[in-house]
Amino acid sequence: MILMLDNERLQELIPNVIHEVKGETLLYNKLRPWLEQAKAWLEQHFLGDLEPEGQILCDAEKIIVYKAFAMAVPSLDLSLSPSGFTVINTDGRAPASKERVERLIASINSFVDQNLDAFVFRLYSVPAWRTSNMGQWWLATFIPNLNEVWRYRGMSSDTMTTYRIMRSHALRFEQEVEENYLGSVLDELRAQQYYLSEFTPLVSKIREAELRYIGFHMRDQKAKCPDEHEVWHLIRPVLEQMKSYPDIYTRWQAEIGHRMKPEPFKNDVKGGYYF
Image 1 (cartoon, helix red, strand yellow):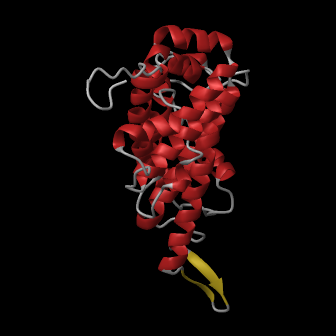
Image 2 (image 1 turned 180 degrees about the vertical axis):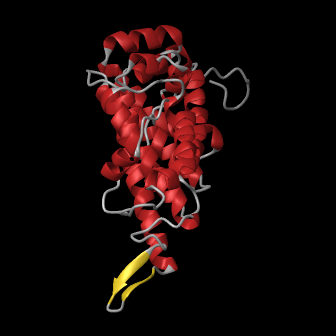
């Protein structure tokens, strides 16, 4: 990604942060190392090789600037005055407390997280991104965005660390579902999850089951049933609802449906209870 930022654009994105006087180091120059680091982070986790344009570029710049700002705060004299972070009191300016600075960083990072979720959704509209390695990574499960991360993120975990853990549980869930219960129908429905269609209720049911599975395992819990039955109980409502979709149900029956039909009991042990 080519980052076309200058000091004027920086002031537009984070207004009322600092006003330089003649001879003072520009805000852009102070932030430059963190801007490069934030850009690399956005490319590594979201953009991949995509060169963003239009609104996606504007959103990317906003995320990069605010993430850089949050990273710079603890180690940079970046403040409302040239001498450091300050607060106004009756005597003029005083150094900002550690707690106040921590709240500022948390607030900025929260802003970054909120914009990231919308940013991922906007990337879905770019065909080149969807077919790229990065796009395929994000589209590999039924949790292709960050809007559920807040449920499981601890105080010490950042958004992407939490999402990667959630994604690993999701992949394990989907592998078992595909192998034992839905077959290739799972891939068909996963490809439908980004559009409103007749399959949306069924897709939502799968996502709900997946999130319940993730919830159990993120909290180091298990569903109240033996391990081999855990996924079955979660996916059973999906199998019931699938009967409302004749085309999919027919393909499912041909591929894997016969596994769901138990063999009739046949008692071949002669004795007092033989029948």
